[in-house]
Image: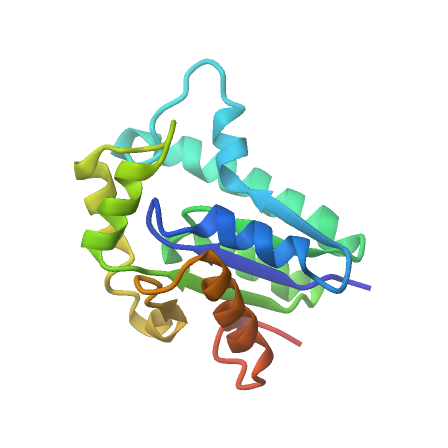
Length: 182
């Protein structure tokens, strides 16, 4: 019995970690909240800021580790809420896992406006505050192509409202947030 996977993503300060925590904590089935930042923070020597071009290989390795961890939990019957900057460019290994294991996998992009994102970033403690980096990462989620329908404007929502909206969208049955499924 495999668990379901929700990839909750968006730019820095979009509310991913808070919302993912709410989704996992209030779930009706055993659920894991997998924070991708922990994988990056585990690199103690040789760490490269993930938004820099020279971090490409590091990012591939980290994504591989994340996908492996998702696989282990999902194969064990846990639902998994992945929270982190997982742009469309990182989806192929997740899709391959979903296909291989027959997992239902959803992709949800929390996307407040740039102004809201920057305002939220200024209020954060100990997190990324570099305006250029945040602006660039926000821009990376601005045009999602075939995944545009996976974006939610969360600028006017607090964390509880955002979690409720994500739950509603994933439960409404139109399957519009699936990137693979059985």
